[in-house]
Structure formats: structure tokens, C-alpha cells
Image (cartoon, rainbow, N blue to C red):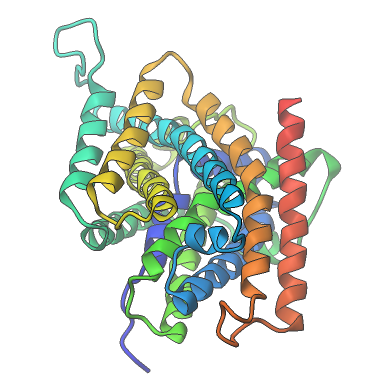
Length: 396
């Protein structure tokens, strides 16, 4: 067996473990204890399957997901419409995610250093600009390959923070096993279950993964291993957060910062520091990957090279929108909810194109999936449609 190398799937983990995922995991743990752990396990399995399928398409065709989607129509007008749809949807969705990502990083940083004055003696809070400047510098100065190395390090730090905190709460192991593998469902839990599933399967991650895969030298087997390990690690992080929150079941907790502060009297200040550090890391990693995914989509639509000036301009534009919105008086949870709704609308559209692509024998060079794989993907697509309908129900 070849030595494992951290590949593009770790960027996916860096992206989906963001403030939105953490917030919903906290709410699920506080309100339901261990009883909804199975929903997170299910969401991770779905993420593994759909991300691996996307990576397989990109590795076989040598193109990103947006390029492959546009190749589905030969009519110039159809291509233009698809390009506009892709750019508009991914840009708006990622701008919404970016605002939530930056806001989440701010909460974590403020909890780590509560006594620091970020106004520097003025009437303006410079913290969003400081975080935005940090992320912007990394995007400008680093190539996607270099950023991958940085993000793998931050993901491991974030994972360690939440793992250790979960251990500090001394959870009931049999209760965890029961919650993970013996599903319980009540109608009133539908919204939180849909949220847990929807926050993990993120459409822009599919474009991010595909764009990174087309430039990789990994084999199909190595790529599958990379996806399963990286997404599995992300799943363990999410489960750890739910387990931490379950220690305070029944209390009024709305954010991971609240969770950290509430854990302090029971498990010491160290628990608060670890939770805050984890939230800051989650916000930073997602704040880097959301602009990258949007930039990849735009580059593929216009035929620009990855890491070109156009790529960096689009990425900085998404980042700038996120900084502006996070600086407004909107609560982070409101921005995150908007991003979740956008995710639900986009997901079935993207899932439909993946189903078409993986069955295109010409594009897949004879490596199209079989009947079993198709049944599984159709079930996932039906689930994506359900998520989309529920998201629209939240609007209307």
C-alpha cells in the first residue's frame, strides 16, 4: 500500500467544518443530547459518496465540475445561460457563507481574547478588517497547493481542539454508540435533522474538490482513500462538537462561544479556550475555501487559468462582500441561515448534473458507474430535492 498523502479532500473538510456546521451541531447536542448523532453519521456517508463521485468525474475527464457541466450543451446560448446560473448561484451562496465564516471567526477570536480592544481607540471595530486582511493575504500570496498545506495544518489543530474538549466532558460511551447506530425520529425534530444533513453536504465543495482534483497526480484509489479519510475526519469533528454540547443538554446555548463559556465551570477554562480556538480555526479555513471555490467556477466558465489574476480578483471580491456583511449589525446566525437556504436550493441542481455526467460514457471514457451506483445517486438526488423544498419552505 502506498504512503498516504493528504490530498484535495482535506480542503473539502476545511470548507464544510465552518461556523454553520458548528452552530447546528451545538444546537442539536444541547437540545437532543446523543439522540441525533445518527443524522450526522448519515450526512458524512452521503458526503463521502457525492464528493468521491465528483472527484472521479474530474480525474477521468481532466476538467472541473463547471467545465463538465457546460460541456453538456453545445448551443452557445445554452452555455451562456448555464454559465450565468453557475456564476450567480455560487457567487451569491459563497458570499453568504463568507459572511458567516468571518463572523464565526470573529466570535472565536473575541472569546479567546475578550479583554482586547479591537477599536484601537476609535468608534470603528477593525476586527472584521483584520480577519479579512489575513485571509486575503493567504489567497493573494499562496497558490492552491500552498494553501492546501496551510489548511491541512489548521484542520488538524481544529480537530484536536474539539476532540480534546469532547474527552474532557467524560461522555457516556454506550450512549454515543446508541445515538450513532440506533436512529430515533420524531416529527418535531425534522428541521434540526434537515439542518444537520444540509450543512455538511455543501454544493460549492463539489466545485472546489473537482477543480483541485484535475491538477492532482493521485490515482483513483488514492483519491478515494483521501476523500474517505478527510471527510471522515470532518465527521468526527462534528460528532465531537455534538458530544460536547450534549454535556449541557437542556441549557440555553445558542453559539459555540456560549458552549465554551458554559463548559468552563464544569471542566475548567481550558475547555473554553479549546472551543474558541476551534471556532476561530473553522471560520478561517472556510473563509479561505469559499472564495477559492467561487473563483474556480468563474475561471472554468471563462477559460481562465487557476491562480490567474482573474482567479484572485474573484476570490478577493467574495471575501470583500463577506467582510462588509459581517461588519453590519446582522447577527452571525442570520447570515449562516441565509447560506443554508442557498445551499438547499443549489444542491439538487448540482446533484442532477453529477448524475448526468457520471453516466456519460463518452466523457467518462468507459468508466461510467453501474446500476447499483446509479440507484444510490438517485436516492441521494431525491434527498437533495427534499432539502431544497425544505429550504424554500423556510423562506415562504
